[in-house]
Image 1 (cartoon, chains in turn blue, brown):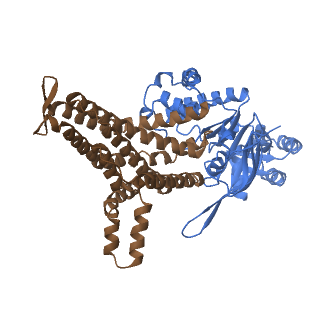
Image 2 (cartoon, chains in turn cyan, green):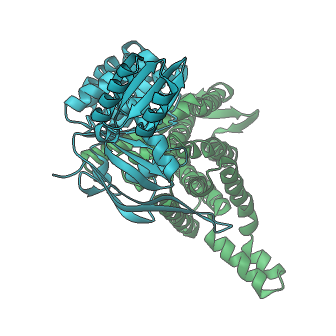
Length: 306
Length: 278
């Protein structure tokens, strides 16, 4: 099956014209994003995420390698037809109204007047801006600009949606609204490629992620697999020092909090053995729970290890 | 041209007009043109005696009927010269800002992500810009031509040709603005270079005189190369005047050599735009 996004050894080197100094913004990234999946691209500032997206959409030319959209080289203009894009720090012309902006970008995607007339009111209503279509973009708040920007990306009903920080500046209600729209698009089979700093959001929404660091893929996989670095947390009170020592040798980590001791065990058996010992020692058990690492834990660990 | 190409071109042209409206560029030109038209409607007085033009009073000068055609042609030439100089400066000044705005970060990425070839984006914007100026030039020239025609019954087509020359020269200068906007993204530099070409043109037009005055062969060659390479704004102005006055045009070289300059500069812009990273 053709991937929605496929890159092969993508490299982008920026050279300073005067000093000759090179920066490898993207350093041999090969990624596959399956058709119909929700994919999150993560990385610290300056990791090369935005450059990667620009290479993907042919805003910049790769030094080496290829970027493909549904099997076609993205440098061909027709390859970009199935893609909708909302850039980070976009600057929509403020002289345009919301309606005019959608009309313009829709036309650039090849939509004719009849299709535009039908689609624009639908999308303005979808992003909650039905009453704002005739208002100039200069009067829109940042959150409204993000929402109308999302409508712009959806104008020609793309099969691939590339969103760079889509909820930047959007209030929690707007964020929820955007997430709902994205979820309904996902159900319709649209591939969503999300570039975001908001790890919680990516964790909540994306099925697959890749973490890039210093222009390279540092980690990639299914969110549920990456966050399955699970353990068992046992929290107890009044643990005698002798028992503490014994359990410390078995636990992966130990933390003290408000007079409680929290042990993290790698397996269920270890946690059960610890529970037996604690009960036998007359300790009060506060909680026992299975834990999983958050995407943030995975992200921090991955970046720090590099 | 297939329908999608047409839709995209029309969208790009319309966007340039929208921006020109929003920045008051179009309305500024339109207002000036209208003021000039009203000026001619009200200051030009004509005496008609038994169905024939007897005298015409224009700018305070009164002339007899048999001189009317000559007077109208001279008035046309004066207006064309005004448009050719002051109008051209204003047009370049106003348009220089319209081109680099497209390359602003956050705006250009969105345009480039669309299924449109880069050359199409640039040519669409260029065409839009030329049409903004052309609409105003044609409006003014046509209206003035009609006013003079109705009042004097003199309908010489030469004045209409001058509008074509004005738009042509503007479109050549705009290729310079385009190239600089693509390479440096600076409206100021673009204007400076376009104005420099305009200022140098009357000097270079004296090429044969300069060659006689210069002693070194290197200097003479430099003047010759500059004269033939750069657009011949001054010579084209003389050509427009000849057309307006109904004089024969001896040499069309300024037209084709300037067109060639425009084509080369435009191709350079398209090449540079095609290779740039945003």
